[in-house]
Image (cartoon, rainbow, N blue to C red; front, side, top):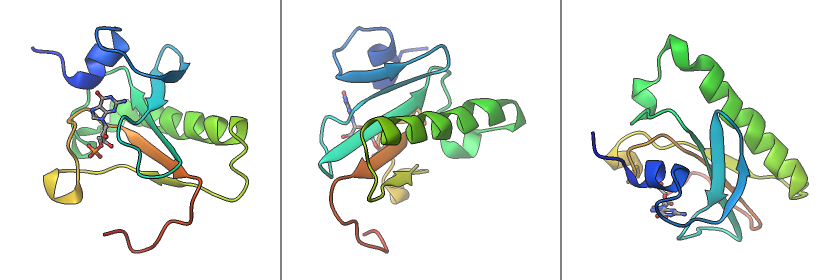
Length: 113
Ligand code: 5GP
């Protein structure tokens, strides 16, 4: 199966500004940031869409949130931040390897567009 763009980042085949990595996950700055802080936290396991997450992935997906919290603390995001995971093209998913967006550094409107 051909690697997706995030698998190429995991394998260092394309560059990214990586800020965190462990056995399960990796986090890097979004190439097209939508806020002053915009980080993507992704699993190393290939899961194409949130709707493909199954029982066996619970620890992996939970881990992404733990790492997002750790990054938020490390960056001192005391005023808040948003965690978002898009499922499907209509929701804005453009890369089909699940990823948690961590957005902060400005007031974020709700509902999102
Ligand atoms: P989605 O639209 O699927 O929820 O989010 C995909 C995100 O990946 C987008 O915010 C987009 O800017 C980011 N992205 C796409 N390609 C790359 C890349 O090659 N490097 C990095 N760092 N981010 C990327």
